[in-house]
Length: 250
Ligand code: 6PG
Image 1 (cartoon, helix red, strand yellow):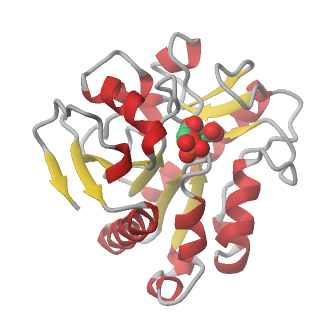
Image 2 (spheres, rainbow, N blue to C red):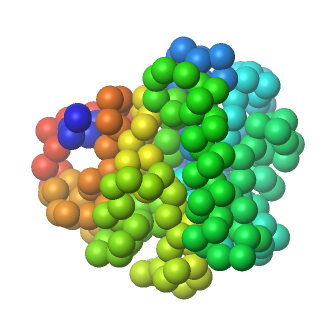
C-alpha cells in the first residue's frame, strides 16, 4: 500500500477550489468504468469548490449523467439542518447539476446512526458490483479537523480503527458540531484511484504539521490503497516544516 503523499501548494482558497475542480474533472474523464464515482467531503472548505462546479465553464466540463456522487460522512441531522453535509452539497451544486438517481445519500432520517451506516454500506456494496473491477471511487475528497480527524473518524474513537465495515455509526463527535455522525471507514475511503485532501487557511497549519510529521492520526493514516494520496493546501496552511519531501508548488 502506498504510504507516500503528494503535497501541492496553491496560492489561496479560490485557487485551491479551481485546482480541486480540475483534478475532479480529470478523475472523471480518466475513469475506466462506464459510471464514474466521486465521494464528497463535508465541512466548510469544499463549499467554494462545490459552488464552482455549478458555474460555467466548470459545469459544462462534467458529463453529469455518467457521474455518481457519494458522501464520506454526514452529521446525523435532517438535510435542511445547516449542519448537514448533504444539504450543503445539494444546495451548492447537486440539485442544480446531478441527476437525482446519481446522488447516493446517507439516510440521516434512519432510526439510528448505526442503521444509517448499515443501509449506506448496502448501497456502496451494490454500487461496487455495478462498477466491476477497479477501485470503488475515482476520487475521494477529504478534509482534516483540528484534532486530526477526517470524515467523521476521530482519533481514538472506535470507527477510526474499523478494519472490516465500510460505514460506521459514530454516536459521539470529538469536535463541534457535537452531533452523532455516519462515516465511511478508512478501508472504504482507501478504495479510490485518488484521495484528495483539501486544507486552506492559517488555522490548518498546526494540524498539518502533526499530520505531515507522521503522527498517528486518522487523517495521516488515510491513504489510497492503489492510487494517489494528494494534499492540496494553500500557502496560509503550509506548516513551518514539512517532513514530506514531495511538496510541490501547485
Ligand atoms: C465533517 C467533515 C470533516 C471536515 C473537517 C474539516 O463532517 O465535518 O467531513 O471531516 O472535512 O472537519 O472541516 P473544515 O473544512 O470546515 O475545516
